Amino acid sequence: MTTVSDNSLKSHVAKMVDKCFLTVPTKRTDESGFLAAPLKKSLAKEYTKQSSDHTLYAIKELEGLRRNAVGRVLDRNEASLEIIYKYYDQLGSLEKQIPSVGYQIPFNWMSAFDKTGIFSSQHNITHNSLAFEKMCVLFNVAAMMSQVAGNQDLDIDDGLKLSMKYFQLASGTFQFIKDHVVSVIPQGPTPDFTQDTLDALVALMLAQAQEVCFMKAAKDQMKDSVIAKVAAQTGDYYAAALKLMQKDQARPCWDKDWIPLVAAKQAGFLAIAHYYQSLVHKAVLEYGEELSHLKAATDLIVNSRKCFDTVHWPFRNTELAVQRAHESAKRDNDFIYHVVVPEAKKLAAIPRASLVKQVQPAFPLSHGFIELFHPLVPNPTSSCTIC
Image (cartoon, rainbow, N blue to C red; front, side, top):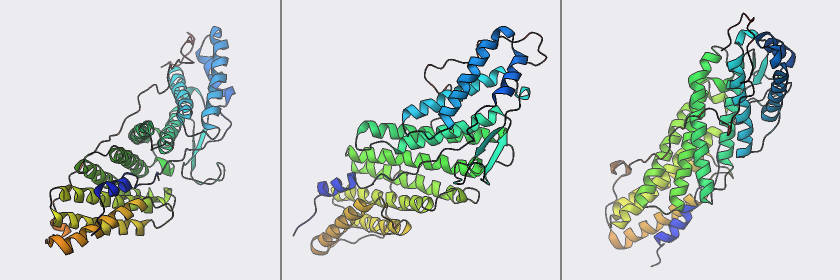
């Protein structure tokens, strides 16, 4: 009788999940940049004539940073993140130097999930507020973090580490935006700034970070019991994300494949958890429990494929490994062991192991940050209070 070795099956499972992440698109804005004239006028009122040369230089630099950060399509890498960081930090520098009532500069941004043009969009808003500009740029920081995370080579340790890092940072940054956006946009936000949408993005990024942790654990061939816990928690995180993504305000944001893929991942990772738990039982000769977990894994992987039956379904190797293990265990039990197979609902719950958390952004974001507007000297005759 020919049986399939555990090592052969594990070789499939270690590579079982094809890379298939959901990354967030960046928000778009018009490319006019700052309206230099009103900004220069405002600063001229607040600062001495001796500061004028530096003011002109600072404004020119700031406009250049904006065009570079939000006026073009950026590559999905850490260098692009640094470009956005620098602009965001200088906005904070400017915001500290002039009062918000001292200028009228309209910033027009559209929803990240709107595919129409900036001027034809039904989901764009304009505010005369640096705080609004900062919030939109910070959204792009989180979105780019997700893109950098999803763009890593997961066959190498450095790629796995960077992917875990940036999915956790994206989750924490979306949480920061959720906690502060209402004070900036108290009503009428674009769909990407609603509380439901941001809740869903926080949960989705965390689920994907945990998925990368699973990939790392499988690649390192950690104990079967450990990998089962990590996979089970991954499924739970995707279940939480799925629930939030289906809320009324959030659901219209997603491309048509997003919810089916997340549903497929919820079932797929629970299938993987049951597969690894079956190996735990097999190692201690508990063949009935082994077979019951494999039956559960088989049912879950079938459900996963039904949710997202496309060429991009990421569990093809999982399906093969589970099928082979289930057939082998069933054949051995039918011809050798003859043990009673317990119902799946009577199995002990698979423990969970969360290896990720939200990582909040630390300001300033950029390396070696130097404030452009710091040296400006207030005009003693100004009636405005400079923060």
